View 1 (cartoon, rainbow, N blue to C red):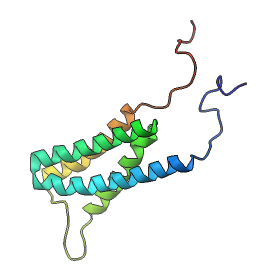
View 2 (view 1 turned 90 degrees about the vertical axis):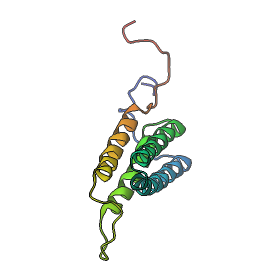
View 3 (view 1 turned 30 degrees about the vertical axis):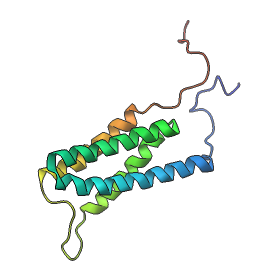
View 4 (view 1 turned 90 degrees about the horizontal axis):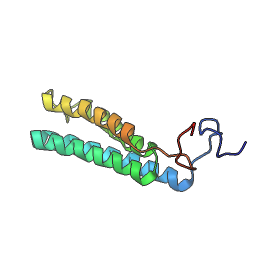
Length: 137
């Protein structure tokens, strides 16, 4: 059987190229930076900052998916965002913290996770090569 007729799930896994791995690593770092910036902005300007932080995450996730041409491009910045935001929720021994116990903080945390899932779901995955005909025709 040739590679065109076999399913993508039946083909062996291959390591990503150096460029693709570097792109994913860059997207993870950008996701962490957007998470830190969003966590600082969301409490400063409550309704607008919250929407700005979530829109920044959505733009990065969808842009990463479009740039890489795969859903992993949306998952990588979402993973960096979630790790950064979860690390910012922990209080320090001095008593300092970034997130206060308010509705805006919870909306940012839960809304950001929902935006990450939505963007990863809506991202265009790689399409198989070949004609655009339906099966059975």
